[in-house]
Image: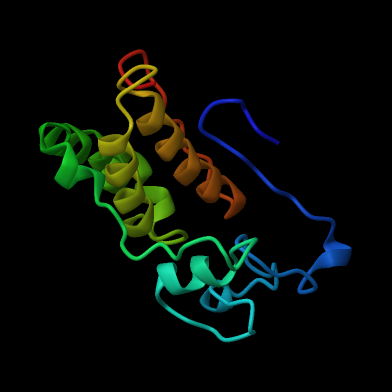
Length: 149
């Protein structure tokens, strides 16, 4: 499913569990081996992982990851302040089930990068992703308000 904006969701039938590979992982329930390259090697570097799945060998390798907060420093403090919601008491019930740190980092990165379509579009999508992960872990968090998304 794609919302034609900032979110895409891929849900596989359970019959495919552990039988797929690629940029979306292998769906075996183990996040630690999702960065498995085309040559079946587990790596930690996202660039090495991504470059291994190029559609054509003639495409150049990506050789660095851009930190959007470095290119748009005026957005960084706003993004950090907004995204701190993920580590706040609003989501306390979820923190023991789903670590907010990677979601916070992604929220800041995405919120720095996204300044078209409304300041909050990428921020709200990032928070909704954490709320969805919490929901999948059995914790429902009422985080939206008239002031937030």
